[in-house]
Amino acid sequence: MNDTILTAVLSLVGTLSGTFGGILISSKLTNYRLEQLEKKVDKHNNFAERVPVLEEKIKVINHRVDDLENGGK
Image 1: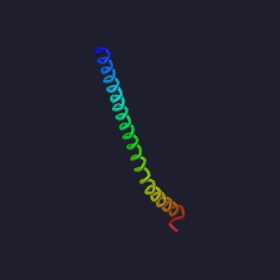
Image 2: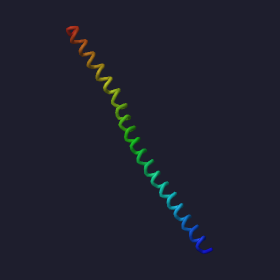
Image 3: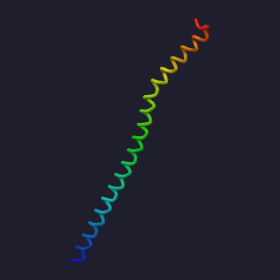
Image 4: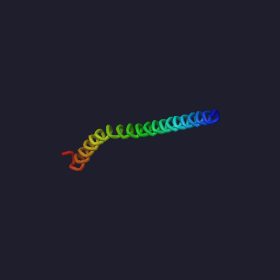
């Protein structure tokens, strides 16, 4: 009877440690992937902030080119 109880307790401890270990590893992987996605989103947000500035500069450049093509008129 004692051997059966000892085996059951050891099985329980092994199962619990394996389960919690898997949960911790999965959690770390999920956190890592979230961090990578956040970095990509930050890059995208930076790009989205710069596009309107570039569009305004292109307008100015186009206006200057038009002025040069029309001989400064």
